[in-house]
Image 1 (cartoon, helix red, strand yellow):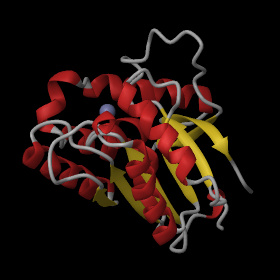
Image 2 (cartoon, protein in one colour):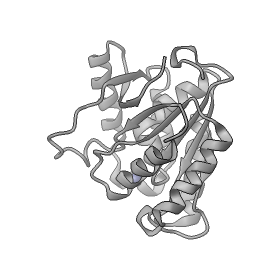
Image 3 (cartoon, protein in one colour):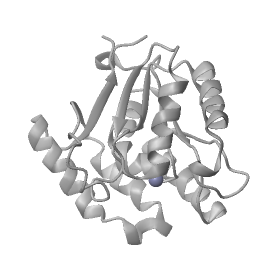
Image 4 (tube, helix red, strand yellow):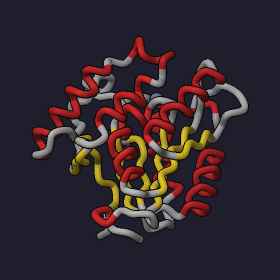
Length: 212
Ligand SMILES: [Zn+2]
């Protein structure tokens, strides 16, 4: 088990996104930074809800830009997370956790209003029930979740100053989704989080479990 302040070639990170672009939008800066620091980072996408071939290609390009390894859990046909039985998703995640034995797992926030994102949070929490890793949660779109008055911003910040450009480029790789994504607001949000954290650009995370 490596401490997050000593990330290196022995550090293993497993990140879950419900759909192909969620990790880039919510955690792309941190994933790219951890990869840059030498960590073995796996970006696991649970489902591809539309345009299967195109979105798999975009996810592959996004992962390549972040410098992480892509794993698509349900790639045979297009579907949403809610179409897959919860026990099947947890079993797939169990297998990944057992194989990778991650030091850090990153997943969707339970407070995310997107139903599929909330399901991935529940499945992840269940899959790491016996594995002693650090666990962080992200909100993949603050605009989409703006009306959640009870949601806090998160308890920790990741400095993504060195990887903000890579994050924006990785989001831009999802060409089919760009009509729904404002790349400038991604940068603006990271700058605002950076101001709060005392760095230039940051991402905010909820701490679900932290060992140091
Ligand atoms: Zn999503």
